[in-house]
Image (cartoon, rainbow, N blue to C red; front, side):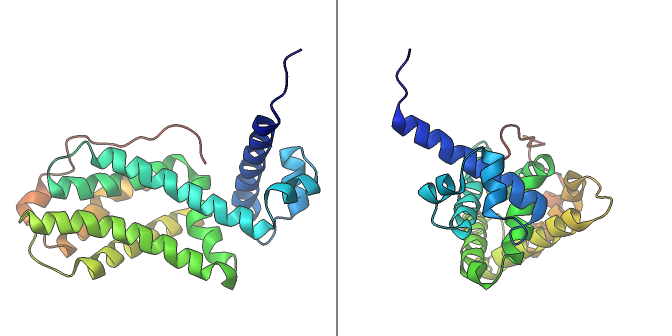
Length: 220
């Protein structure tokens, strides 16, 4: 009989807890999810939950962080395929929309439950918003340096870009009969590129050559 590795068993249970919590938060929301609900879905005890996480809040914080990490990694992989600065910004926007379109639970955790979990999460929310805005700012700074767009306040512009993206995704999540999130890309792209001063001739060229960024894989 093979020996069971206690460390591996512990890691496996921790992952089960995170997966169960992710599904529960996406379905019920943070406030309406009890630790007992997570324990039942993870097929462990309440004590097993607290062995790995001191509180429900700690689980939620880790889920937000790991989910954001995975989204950023996907964006960076898509951007790495592009050479032209404006195309990099387009790839980032396209990848975020395509990822959320395919993983609605991921979008709910990042865009809805995070905002509705209470004051304790405001600082974490702000940090995540700043992280994504800083990512956008980097691509805009590169475009300015390359002369692809005129000099501008990339800090403010990146906040505007993230705010617009946040609103589009939130409205899609809250809609009774949501359409295709990816179909918002052409109009959103034009608005955002114009806000950054991208020449109309460049905007008229359409998206970058690498096209739709369909994402597959785990939802967490």
